[in-house]
Length: 216
Ligand code: ADP
Ligand code: 5GP
Image (cartoon, rainbow, N blue to C red; front, side, top):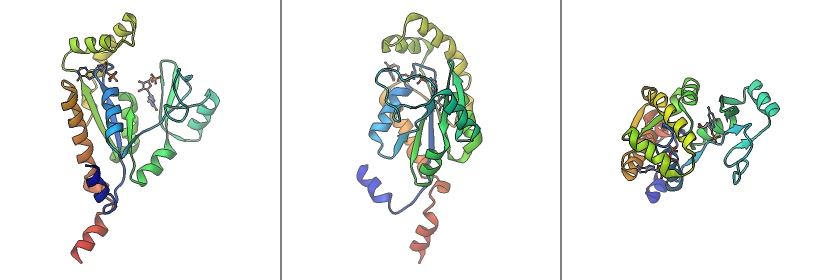
């Protein structure tokens, strides 16, 4: 696969894409996203700006760009964010410049955002966006995964379960919906979507010259 990529990349230039993964919390989005970043050499995480303070272990510029409220407001005013939202009392937003430059250079960006952020990105950059929604195989399994993860208190789990039904109701705002039953099967499906979307004619900006060369 890596060999194939290094052979095809220089031949055909293409525009990058914005790959959005959303899911009700506990479905497996983070697991799938991490594996994609590890196994796919061409996709990188979009790093958001946030006014939330860093959690232990979080690195500025890697997990988020941590900014204060005044700087966030300035970025909004200056139109430097493609989209932004207030989540749990903190502001989060997607910086425009890194994405615009990266897409032109053929870089793909992975977004871990909810359905509202997805809607905003889609409204602003429709042709660059690929929206994937992950669903759990059942509500019982979702609850089990939240428990099994071992990161949340019973109270937080109850809150996530209550929100899950609302999140699930937005399934029709996505291009692809994948049920995460078996993790390996789900990952392969997500990867197949990414591979296919990269081959969309409109994204392959090098095709005009390439085909011209072939026909010469
Ligand atoms: P999310 O990012 O959607 O909140 P996580 O990736 O943190 O979800 O996954 C929640 C828990 O479920 C984790 O403990 C993860 O290992 C587990 N998990 C993810 N996918 C599967 C699967 N297909 N089958 C069983 N467990 C899974
Ligand atoms: P956390 O503080 O746990 O890292 O993230 C909280 C929530 O903010 C998550 O639901 C995450 O998807 C969302 N979020 C993170 N970055 C952005 C962003 O740039 N835009 C939007 N709309 N939501 C974001």
